[in-house]
Every structure is written in structure tokens, then in C-alpha cells.
Amino acid sequence: GENVEQHPSTLSVQEGDSAVIKCTYSDSASNYFPWYKQELGKRPQLIIDIRSNVGEKKDQRIAVTLNKTAKHFSLHITETQPEDSAVYFCAARTNNFNKFYFGSGTKLNVKP
Amino acid sequence: DAGVTQSPTHLIKTRGQQVTLRCSPKSGHDTVSWYQQALGQGPQFIFQYYEEEERQRGNFPDRFSGHQFPNYSSELNVNALLLGDSALYLCASSQTPFGVSQETQYFGPGTRLLVL
Image (cartoon, rainbow over all chains, first blue to last red; front, side):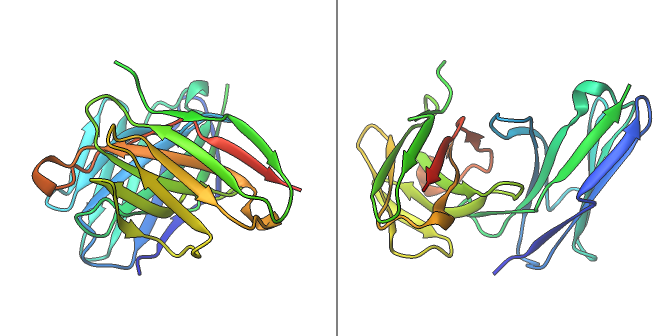
């Protein structure tokens, strides 16, 4: 089955700096890659996603890049703010039935 | 427009007991997936229900079973609870028009289960 690895497990940045979180996947058939933000005690919230036919997608301060050949995708957050502090999860969908595999999460701490 | 709801929010059980968790999907959604999220880990896919049938299953034992009702709501049942079943159980809903899954899924707030 699919295996999604996520790095780093923790990331601490100064407010205003950029943050990058990386994920790799093993199944070349995976075709959809969402990123979720989960604040303490709350549900995962979809923040951005990318499909396998696209290399990059941007939404304001958040961007995601996908390298299908290398089987990795990354989340980029620019101009970080304290409210960006949360746990971020990447995921990969392996088939067309919405079976998702998640990474182990990255705890982002943005210091004011 | 109601989002995904789950009940109960918290639950405490003892080993060997059985538990039932409930999920109501977002309005207009017909597919429900269940995930187990252990502390400090990412969600792990348990199974998915569509048209009242289990359509996909993750690597979970038969102690985990489910059901989907005609109104698209769903239940997750866990029998013979183990200490290791303690986790946050999340459901996520999505749409499957004409049998084709739409990728975007929305999570409920989860049920936190503690097994003593």
C-alpha cells in the first residue's frame, strides 16, 4: 500500500519567516495531495490541495509544489504569523475511491 | 448549511466493551469515511461507506465495523475494545456523483475515545 512520510516533525520559525514542510509518497498511482491544518483539539481543515496533473498551486501565503518523478510534494507558507501555529498533515489519495494516507504531521510553531 | 457532525464528543469505556460512534455528513454529501487518529499521529483510514455499503477498507481488524443509513449518516462500531483503541475517531464526508468520488473531504470534530 501507499506510504507517506513527512518531515520535519517539528518546525519553529520567527514571525514573518517562511516555513517549508516536505512529504514523500511511494505509490506512483496517487493522484491527489491535500494538506490539512489541525489546531489543538480541533478537526483537520483543508488548506490547499494539488492534483497530479499540476506542478504548483498557490493561494495567498500558501503554496504547494508537486514533483511526480521524485514522488514528493511540499507545503510553503510565506510571511508566517502566530496564527499559523498548528499541526500540518499531508495526505495522498491512492485511487479514485477517496482512500487517503496521511503523513505523521509537522508541528509548526511561529514565534512572535 | 450544516457541516459534518459527530457524537458523542468524548467517551470512556473499559477493555472488552463495545462502542458505537455516529457521524452525520455535510449537507449534500453521500460518502462517509472513518479515520483513527492516535495521539501525535496522522489519521489512519479505517473504511468508507457509500450507497450503504463498505466500499474501501484500511488495515483494521474485523472488530471495526460500520453502517451507513439511507440518510447518508454513518456509525462506527468497535467490539472487544483494547487499550490501543484509545484515539480520536474522525469521520469525513465527500460527494460521489455518478459513482465517481470527488476528492475534497471535510472532517467532523471527532469523538475522543479513552479505553481503560
